[in-house]
Each structure stands twice: as structure tokens, then as C-alpha cells.
Image 1: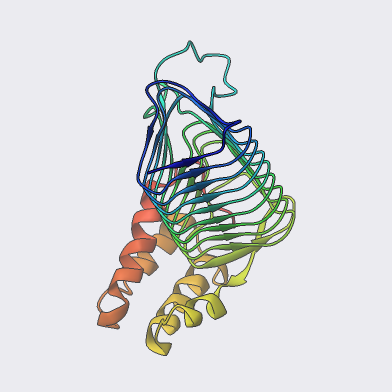
Image 2: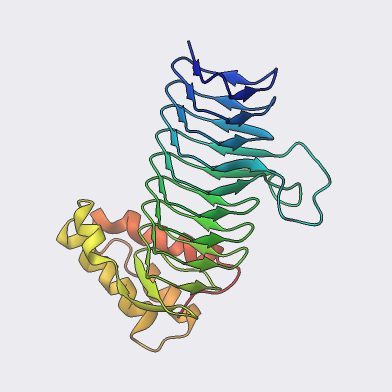
Length: 262
């Protein structure tokens, strides 16, 4: 049974799983689905075609599933999809997707989203992402897995941020950030490799050494972008356990449409 405070408004049609709790004065719309064990705090508004997985914790004053801040939006039944075991703090705003993209704004699993974070329409976030206070993501931004975004980071629309990236406080990102990097500044610049983060996640010294070599090829040898891609491709097979890391970087660079931060 769900536990619903008497002052909460649950519109007919909303689906709440077992052991969901909804705090005082929260509003849950008719097209909302919430998975078992999730906790919805007081004064939370969840609207639109929003699906929330299990064991999430959503703090007071969050706004989830509101219409996108896009003048082209015409009331289409687009979606917000949130995975499992996410912590979503105060005053966050996650908007629905738009039909100009895939129609879905998506947050994966096991993410830690701090206060005043904005996810605009059609953003796609992976798993194990930490986003610090007042970080703002414009529309169509893609964030990989194990990414840490420092407070007040701002990301331009359509940018991609690769796996294991860390951004410093106040970073202003207007191009794609390749995997494994640390970036700071406004405009953002690559400051080095997120080596400590990789070690904490169990990367072996051999894998880290190959990733350091990729950083060197991209940022220390004065190569053109195409030449750097060739240099990274050449690292495949040199350390077999790092081949997945090399392939991850190669795919990211091949898929980049805004150019990378260099």
C-alpha cells in the first residue's frame, strides 16, 4: 500500500507502486507512474507522462515532468523517464522531451542530483552521475556514466559529456567533452585526466596508462583532430584490457557533432 498524506493531490489515473510515500501538499498528475519504494517529499509537483522507477527519493519543491521550455512545443504527449535509486534534491526542474528529438528526457539509475539543477527537454543522462547545486543543462544534452558536474556548471544545447568526466565549479561547456577528462573554466578548457576518479572505480594502472596516452594524443602532441583520432585508433590492442576504453573514446570522437573542448 502507498502512504499518501491527506493533503496530497493524486489525480485519477496516476499509478503508485507498493510502499510509495507521498508527502504533504504534493501533486501527482494523471499520467504519472511511480515505482515501488519511492519516496516523494512535501510540495513536490510531478506532471505529464512521467515514469519514475523504484526506490527513488525526491525532496521538497521539486518540479518533474512540466512542459519543456521550448516555443515549438505544442502539447504533444512526450515523456520524462527516471530510473531507479536516484536521489533528487530540492528545487530541481526536469522537463518533458519534445517531438523534435526522441520525445523523452531520461535520467538513468543511481544518480545524485543536488538542489536547483535543471534538466531541459530531451536531455539523456546515464548512471552514477553526480550533479552539484545550480548546474543547468540546456536541451538535448547527453551525459555519460560516472560523470561528476561541479556546482554552477552550464552546458550548451546538443553538447555531449563522455563517461568518467569531471567538471570544475562554474564550467561553461559549449563543445563536447571526451571521456575521462577534467574540464574547468568559462569557456571550458581541458585541465587534465580524471585519474583519481578512475582509480577509485577500480581501473588498473595498465588501463589508466593507456587512457593517459589518449589524453596525450588529443591534447599534448599538437595534432589535428583527424590525426589524433588515428593515433587513438592505433592504441587498440596494445593493452588488451584497455581496448574497451580505446573503443569508447573512438566512438565518442566519431559521434561528436559540435567538436570537442581542446
